[in-house]
Length: 174
Image 1 (cartoon, rainbow, N blue to C red):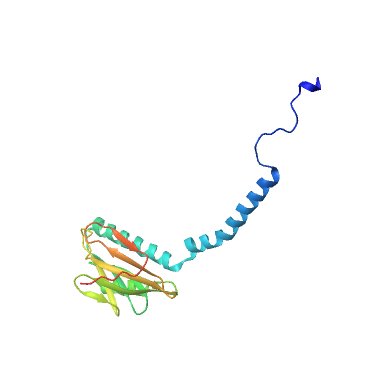
Image 2: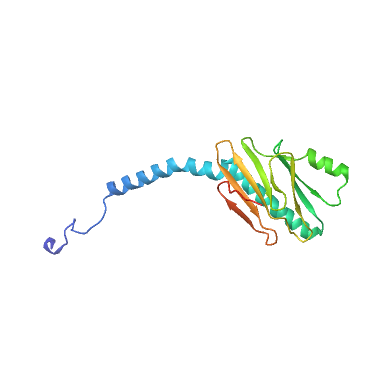
């Protein structure tokens, strides 16, 4: 009766429990070491976060201009590193309040300059990007930079509503 039984250990190929344990441990170690860097890059990088914020603002202002059928402006104070939105029928008092409540960019992130096809490069003072009631915007470029030398370039397309994003400083000439 015992002679007909298959042997307990055969020549079948496979992995041992120890080999699987070591592989799982190594994978866990690599994920554990990489997760903080991934989390930092995705969630705490102020330059990338500011870039996403400005892109969202541009899209929202364009949509608002079309919906309300009036001109809108995004103002950038390049000296104080702040920005705010204004619209065509604003009173002087409303505009002053909007300027007071302007959003500040995070520490270490700056609007380096804004380029306009018609006006050229603006590096100081106050720059404004106008959105027509049809959502059109002059061909313009926003350059964002961080203290560590990284830069993003946001190119606003006049008629298509697209924003091209470059993960470097791209120079545009008039």
